Amino acid sequence: MKLKQYLLIFLSACWLLVGCNGGSTASSSPDKAFGLKLGQMANYGATPWYTEEIFVGTSQLRFALDSGSNFIWATSDQCTTTACNAHNKVNTSQPGFVWVEETTVKHSFGPWGSMYTRTGKVDFKTPHFASADVPFFASVKYTGEKFQYLDWGGGIGFPSSSDAIEEGSGFYFYSLYESGAIEIPTFSVVTHPETGKGAFFLGGDDPTQYDKSSEIELQPNRTGQAKDLWGTDLYSAQLGDTVLPTLTNARFYLDTGSSEFKGDSVYLIPIMTLLYDIRDAELDRIFEKTYDTDGNWIGLVYANGGDPMKHVARLPDFTLTMGQSCAMQAGKAAQITLNAQQYSYYVEEGEQQGRWVVAFTPLDGVGGLLVGSTFMDLLYTKFNYAIQDSGGLTQGNMYLYAKTTGTGPAALNCAPRPESTVARNPVR
Image 1: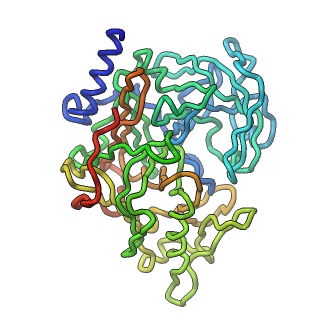
Image 2: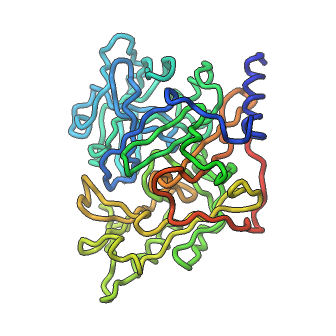
């Protein structure tokens, strides 16, 4: 093993075990953060946040930075459909661009739609880091209208493991880390919907934007079906006073590429059923159901032009209990509560435009409960990698913090960790 690899393993162990000066205080200067912008909210379940600071060669695109994806993709000039024309495109005729594989491959996203790609390669350039010459999936066709309403025309995956990268794609973060452009294998995210701005830090964080004393440690749980996702233990979830049995001792995933709560029907339908059964003072339903083209129940919208603010007294809070420590106290779990306004959103474009919807959508195959900006907009979130013996990366601890500015969850409390849980060491 090379000396550099020994040193990197030592530094990673220091970071994960004792924190290298306090556990979670490594910082990134502003030039190590991608600025995030808030796009229009659509009813498609994808994050409205994107960056414009990454160029594919000479082509500037809007990219989602996606911890729920295991590949890199970008709209190319080989696609001329309505959905493709809604986005900036990669110039495949530019100097330095090469086709690695010109066979078209279909990537299916189920009811969301499909993307057809070929594999290209060119330098990914930013103002912050050295160029990274990585292969990516160049989109040549989209099916499903939701692609048209994406605020971004490409995605860069930050999966939980090097081993999870889809064959043919590069791993942008690992390329930067392996080259030495990133010294500590971590990234962190903070967003402020009230200003429409956020930041995505590579190699550290910004301690001025969170309260360190509020630290919640989330140790890895990467078992189950979604092994490329950043998973942890969810001890329990409840809607109002009703505990949701299917989400007791389930898996919980943080997905920066998502907006809503998603998960298998066994987890989501009980939540949606409880909400649907709630009525207003006149005994009218507060919600109406929405269905996909196959007749499957996929969501709830507020009936009769309603919104969560009109039903504050009747709509329950949603509380999640998780974490191996809370407020830096070992043996404590965090109870994070969202009110109805926080688990709902107003649709600004596309399907259901002009209406309020509930941010719960069934998505079978997840193997747990997944959430993105609906939850992470309320907190500062950090993702730590550990180093594998092979030199690759795998999931370490995640951390949640109360933000120093902006809106936080309706409640954030610490409680004794359930006795049925067993403390595990971080994956190394």
